[in-house]
Image (tube, helix red, strand yellow):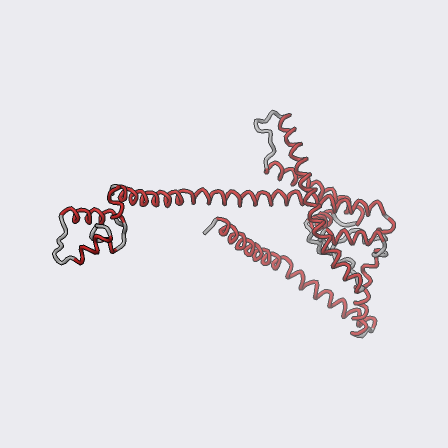
Length: 336
């Protein structure tokens, strides 16, 4: 089996194993808390129904109103600032779900917009990531020259370390900023930054949704957009390095397989050459005078010309001489 096939199979097995491990861990961490919160919310809802004498239909209506009103707590979501923020989230494939189009025209345009915008965004982030890697390689090279290192060229590990450090700086700094403006804990802000820059986008934490921030805090809106775009570019730089490393491994495997196949091909060619050489050597034993006798046709079994064979066979007193018998033996040895 080829190394590429083995690697692909190994990746599939490792991925599904990782999924099973993740499912088991999340089950053990979240299942009990989910049951506890579900029971608590049911008790609160029953208490409210009894206290205010609310029917089940009225309570369902109140739940629907609260759910639908939640996006509007941040102010208008579809003015230009809010629409630009939504378009950025779509192009970056984050998908918080904090606001969604409700009209048929808005949904149709969203699908068409995403079909064009997502590939465009991927290419843009990938290109920016390549430029960042190039800039990081130049900086690393200058630092190595300054430190008088023997090898001044930036390696893949150096670039991955640099992008990892830069990603950590962006996430930690962004967590501090969002913790201040949104009133979250630092851990929750760090969680939001990580979920955003990895394009997971659960939507449980969404920036710019308090105090009508989209309309009243343009500086904070600009900072949030810069954080998303620049952070995704840095993440794309890291992904670009991983993709290049994987492609390099595939190229090395292909080159190794070609190298392993070369001895087998040479052995086949050598065997063919030996066989052909022996056959040619066997034919070379025949002189120029015996050219007519080198045919493998069955009608030349007597070793003479065709006309002579015919006449000899018609003669009842004919007996082959010692010379003809020797010629026949010579032909039989030379024939293939």
